[in-house]
Length: 254
Image (cartoon, rainbow, N blue to C red; front, top):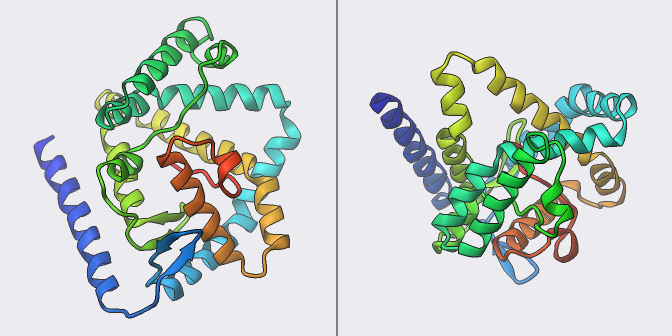
């Protein structure tokens, strides 16, 4: 375990250093999303990755997501989404504690208990019915509350839009996830990968209409996607509803 932790930390440090050096090697002017300054020194590379991602999406992810929507009732899709969200509860609670958000911690803990015990493991979101809404939190948001800036905007193969801060946060969340640790320590890795696959399927189905609209109505799809991602992340950091205060919902694949 110690060796794995060392390797993981070394990987994050090397990744952060590589991005930092690359950012320092360019004089590209920043872009503004609203009043927020966004650095995109890797735009040429990012556009290439986006083109690759679009190819994978058109060939695989989008057709599977459309088939999933056509073959399953909405009630089933919502049940799966609720279940997957409930599985993220320990990560959400941990990040709220690190952010010093005691009210959010109490709400997320109550959601986990109510939905797990009374909602058949989280299939039913009874907590939301009782007024305790789902609030996503991750280590990227935690870093932001600690004063860490976005860092350069990046597009990750398969995963999609991110920033160097959010990418590091995603790696930390994935590494410390209690469910992942349990499954790997009990030789049940298949369940973990099944969960990841279900999460990608659920999120891609959720984005079908949003991305269709963005592709059809954007003069520059890359810039529109970048703007939507940054706006959504800023809304989440401020604990605002991204559906009301930001652009289209572009959730993070985990």
